[in-house]
Image (cartoon, one colour):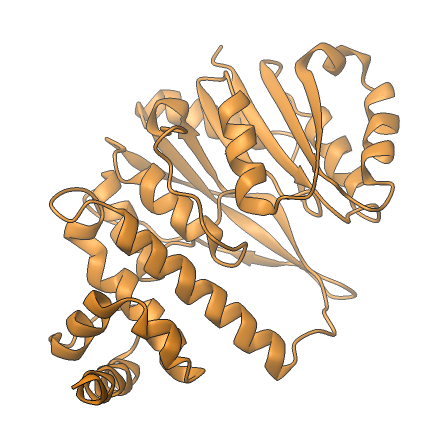
Length: 312
């Protein structure tokens, strides 16, 4: 029975951690390593987790709870991956919860299909409303190259919590860390999925993704998240080798997302720090079937052309 390492970041989730932990400790699969990383949470999240664990004595020897100073989600994920010993790894957000056969169904599919990655459907949970089942799509060929291409173009979602991956795919020493927590899953999965031999879709919803209402969706918040996403994408492109790996197949997709977000918030100073990206975007041929529609590509290309003219 393959061992699965479940990594759970914890920060400010005292309202939700009990349900999350109970669903994880109640898994029908027995061979699990639980890694909870408390990222300096200012509330009682870690204490509540300890209380829940007392009700599952059979899981105590399988559970590690790490306490650290607040360093942000990207660092937490890397810490967890560095500690993982399971043959497979999956990430779970601590404000969500999972079905009892979440792990067993994913592992059995991976073993039956001899797959390096298995991704599943999920429930989108809304406060005061019925959940909505979100169906993932298939893509072909089923290797990691196409998985990354599909992810960057919204054929499949970039979420880490609906993807069981072979630990061998993760090089924690060479892993490029996202600069910020927004769209950090895209940065991680671009590197992790790319080397997979085979990725398969389990057509069952097994994960409950909680959509929390936020009062912070202001203009300032939107600008901040788009800026952080753009910086994450530009940093990823800048850090990856250009003669092999993800850049050779989806480099333009990475840059288009970064360019569009930078241009729509009119943060040209951000783009100016990456002249190679500006040059590529200003000279690109328009890409069809892309995450960034043609109309947005036109605007991004025009902005980058103007930016290059201003440099002269």
